Length: 523
Image 1 (cartoon, rainbow, N blue to C red):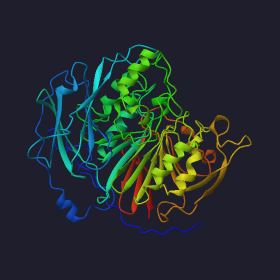
Image 2: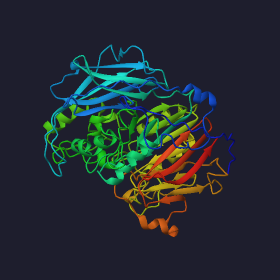
Image 3: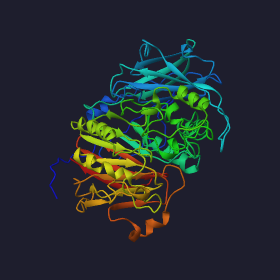
Image 4: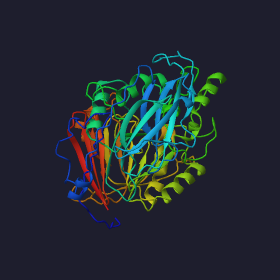
């Protein structure tokens, strides 16, 4: 195998102490011993405590969903979007957003040039498996610009000039500040006790942001399901608890990957509030150009009145929001729609992906997030291998990790190099989704003493709350594929990534906080 040159540095653990509205950081684990070496004394001195954020009372009925943080259209350091859901009668002009840096000083208007914008969500309720009524409401979004990258800031939402909500958050970190932590989990929001425990554990890890690897809400990606099973758990208004969830989203950036349960149930006649991914996520619109209801988009059907209502609620998010990229710290993240209707052998999509990855070669780290894993050992979903057609680009542009969900457990591959081959019919993707090819494994890499992989590592982190898959395989190593290095299916879990300048440490932590896997990638 070709040797890799790398410099191995000690990990600088960089936990973020986020504060909620007027509350000190008294979360369980906030004073626990940090993972890895402590930050340098100068870094500790620089992180002076901020004054408490003054409390703001929220009158009952003000929000359909309280404010939460998103990347927004810009998707770069110094910019975030604050999003909330309001009553239909509250037009965008009723709202304003103010920010301030450093926990004190004067408040300033955010996005003063045009103020918040809103889209109407007015869908017919009912339909098969309805999760509850969906009152007509507005998704209000305000883009915050001019933030000091990597620095804490306060924001407050005003309705008709009066403050009704406030929180403290952290602006995205720039490339000059490489130390950051993010967590990932997927296949999560079905209202289970496991989902709530994972949400609480994610909160306790104090991440800079959270990556959800698809199948965000069960069972059909509907607005009613977001209302019942997503926002109340990840943006909980009460105290954090493993029994209820945590107030994560108001102070911690969330990034969402689209899964099959999010976008594949596109019959708006049966599921009139479906495709809510396009309503509630404000993410960069820098993906490939797509035509509404065209190729490589969800196959939307249903009455034209329902389609028109969906288009009004989704706005510019449909159909581009499922493929995008962004930078955080010294890393580049590329998010892909890996659903069955997307043909990643097509020249247009491949050209966009290649351009995106080629432009990211100056980043220290490159991550790809998608839902359907190219490689895994579970019996369930074993034939769904169509993303393997992209492995040549992942390897050419030196992607470090591919992070997926779909399979409800945790799996880590050995470093893989894979070359897809065409079948007898001339196609790469065969019956049922299988992709055959030639594979080489870096058997020397162990993530402990040998930390420079020759190949791409593929992670499955789909144990975020949905029913676990193929638990029995955990005790049957003979049932696993040769490329699988770790397989954990006996507990709900999440993945914690500590990113430094030249070292990445990855830990798999179960819903009770126990570490189940750890590996290091060095450059």
